[in-house]
Length: 225
Ligand code: GRF
Image (cartoon, rainbow, N blue to C red; front, top):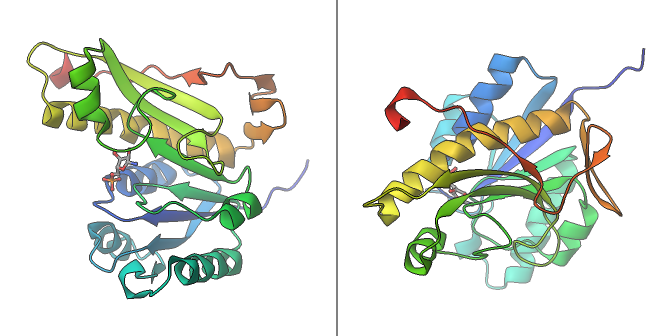
């Protein structure tokens, strides 16, 4: 039997870290062969860092605000990432666009979660734009990262139907609940070597996925029925 060493994960954060939380819990519950070898934040006050410290994870702050030039921030981030030498970099609410050099260096090892059903609603303020557009569905997408923002090959999506009286806040909470289910599962697929990026697209369990990715059906909790 082929021996696969434990996978090294690095998680990049800027905000609350609810996805980080979900990932840590899932890794532990599923006893996956992976370790979070670093949590990197671009801001020292990100609540995600407090969560990471509580879990005893190695934390690194590369404080964007202290850099005179973004190029130097990207260089320090790149150096830190190369030192940590991850098998997978997980963007979990990281609010900086990575340099092309970083994206190319870690091509196929870099994933992001975005709060919309890509390719619809790239960029920020997705919930507001979904409400204004009269869409009937919304959701979240996990994709490999390429140099073009929110355009990398889609791995998986999880969707919801808009409800009467939906607000930006209700959508945010409902989409995040989906993210907390979807992101850990996709990471587990990667750790189990079921997922890879090829020149043809995303391959999952030896089959090429459609451009919309795997359509993941969420577990419905009683409160959501
Ligand atoms: C998530 O909603 C994700 O879609 C977006 O940033 C948010 C991060 O939330 N990219 P958290 O910091 O994980 O709570």
